[in-house]
Image 1: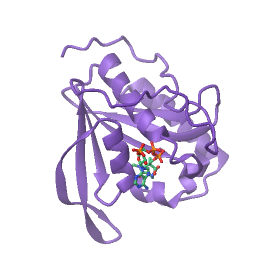
Image 2: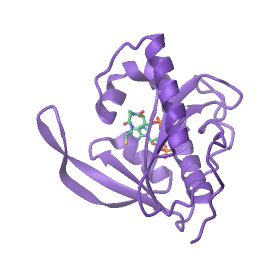
Image 3: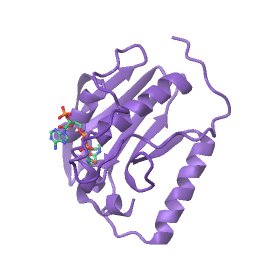
Image 4: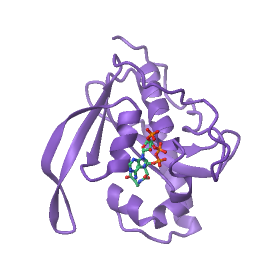
Length: 191
Ligand SMILES: CC(C)(COP(=O)(O)OP(=O)(O)OC[C@H]1O[C@@H](n2cnc3c(N)ncnc32)[C@H](O)[C@@H]1OP(=O)(O)O)[C@@H](O)C(=O)NCCC(=O)NCCS
């Protein structure tokens, strides 16, 4: 988590200034995440290797109206390029569809964020269009790509729980940590 906050690319893409956070700030963030789970409006997970406790990234669902949700994600620089983000996003979509009754997960990426766009494509999202001059950063307007994955869409063509390539720097089985059952009741999918 501290690594992620220091990463200029994560900060730039997710809209904050990179910083060197203190342990207190990290603890406050973890407490905030627990509160978000209780409120069930913005639901974060840490991405980690199976049987390891070190966070390698994050993935988050922002719950919307009418069974919509928006996903955002990052992996920390040393963990990139191993398929973790695509696995995490896919697993969270499956959780959203199967457990939360979400019908549509959408994702906004900067048009020039090729890594994020590639994650979206790999995790089964379709491009719906370009939102021209949608975002403002550094005094300039930027195009944004709108992607979505529906509960009725075919799943992506990979196994999100297959073993990762052990020759990579930090090996293991990626994906979000197991969701804790803080949700009041298991929703039933209706479509
Ligand atoms: C975007 C980000 C999450 C990608 O994480 P990652 O763990 O490296 O992604 P994965 O390893 O799961 O890669 C998934 C696919 O994207 C491709 N990809 C990854 N980085 C890429 C890049 N820089 N350019 C082009 N394709 C890229 C991979 O090759 C892979 O496709 P493949 O399996 O067909 O080869 C990471 O770069 C990041 O945290 N960036 C900063 C935060 C950010 O942009 N978040 C998204 C906001 S919407």
